[in-house]
Length: 223
Image (cartoon, rainbow, N blue to C red; front, side):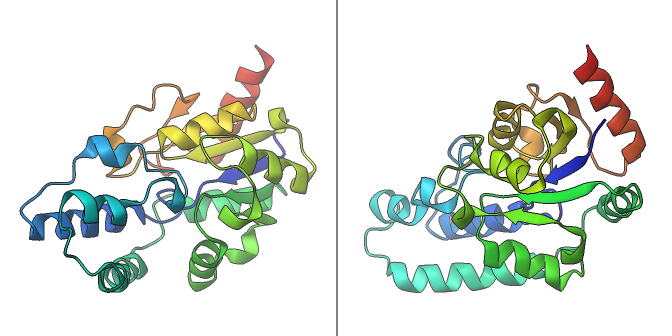
C-alpha cells in the first residue's frame, strides 16, 4: 500500500522552471546569442552549483560583464516572474486528497530551502508537507537518490510505499534510483526533454485523479 507522496518543487508545484530559462535566454539574446536547450537540459533538476552559468556567460559570451550586477538584475527578474506563477493544475486536488487519505506528503528538491519553503508558505501550502528536503539538507543531489532517501528516512516509509512526482529527467532518475515509483509531469520547459524512463507520464496532475495513480503504483509494485 502506498503511504507517501513525494513531490519535486520547481516545475511540479509551480512553474518556476520557465522564468529561469526565460531570463537566461533574455540575457543571451541581449548579446546576440542563443541559449540552446542542449545546454539547459542537463541543468534542469540539478542544484545551482552543478554548473556555473554565470562563469560560462563571462567566458564565452561577454568577458567584460560585471557578474555582480548581472546576478542581481537577473535574480530580481526571475523572482518577479516566479512570484507571479500560480499553483499548477491538479496540485491542490492531489494535496487535499492525500491529506484526506492520511498519506504522508513531502518535497524532495535541488533548490534551497528558503526558495522552496518560502514559496510554499506564500501559497498557503506549507502545512500540507510532513518534511521538505532541499539543497542544504543532503550531501548528494539529483540525479543521485540522496534527496529521496532522506525523505524516506524522515517519513519512516519504504521506497515501495511511496510515489514521486518529477518534471525532469534528472529528477526521474533520482527517484527511481531510490526505488520509488515515479510519475513524470513535464512543464513547458521539460516537455521537450526525454522522460521515457519514468514509470508513468501525465501532462498535468489534473489529468488523472490521485486514486488512479495510487492504483497504478500498487499494481506496478506487485508485478
